[in-house]
Length: 113
Length: 117
Image 1 (cartoon, rainbow over the protein chains, first blue to last red):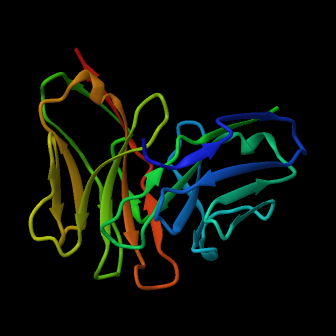
Image 2: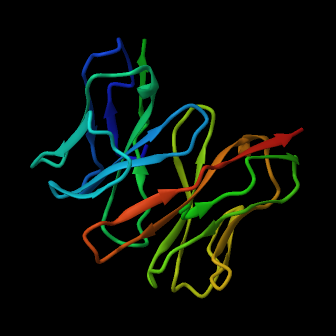
């Protein structure tokens, strides 16, 4: 158990809809990262937060947004969903140290129909 | 530009043999970290091993070792005495930008390893 909790595990929704994915980081970790993994693809970095502040942005679409709250949990909002948004979305947390690995949640599998 | 390159999309290895998964990276940072993760078919991401750019010795964790060649910018994962349970996708990752505002961790596209009985 990595200590990172992601909800929900599975999400099925229709095109055009909006969903929110939730992540609770490991106790003590201030950094939260979001990644997207499409079928048989690598992990695409979306966005990173550190102690509530956005720190780095990757290939995140304008239809997607995220935030980290004072209690350090984070939410990823996906709107105007398209079929191509179907993917496994991972949240990971870490301390801010080069030797610290990312600890991943089990992911949210999003299916857009 | 690709920062992490894993040139082997797929590999087939006989059980009990050693296997080397290749990873090359590109960074201008002096301080960075390299990681390997395993993703079995169940989907979770499992941290395997870490190598720091200033570490002089290659990292080892049980059957996993990291062959770090800094001048060549390579960080290959070696799995000794492979087991059927090692069949999975393996990702190489790099953490750079530490000390800056943006602390990015970039993943390669992965290598799918199949262990044959």
